[in-house]
Amino acid sequence: MTSLTILQRLAQTIETRRNADPAHSYVAKLLNSNEEKVLKKIAEEAAETIMACKDGDKEQIVYETADLWFHCLIMLARHDISPEAVLSELERREGVSGIEEKRSRSQNQSEPIRGK
Image (cartoon, rainbow, N blue to C red; front, side, top):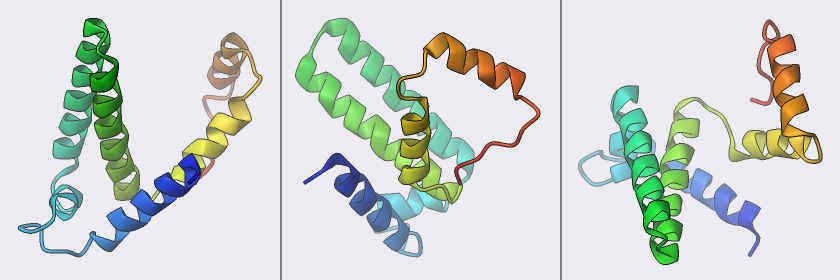
């Protein structure tokens, strides 16, 4: 199983739960809540990931990062953005100096974001 396959399957599962009963589906509950709830959940999971890193607990780092990525997939679904769009952006940046990539973003600020 490739990493892309699991991301695609999770994204598909999230989509299938969009219209599920929020009383029976955590994903439906988040998709049908206000965006602030999802963003707070991402912040919470990011903080837990940071604390796991600070503690040096590799198992907990993996667990918390999985939670963070999962909630990011929900956020992407709320905005009708596929995981492939994010992966394409990472692929575009591959082999490019981070300094140069950041500089190019500041020069192109007036351009709309692509990849939806």
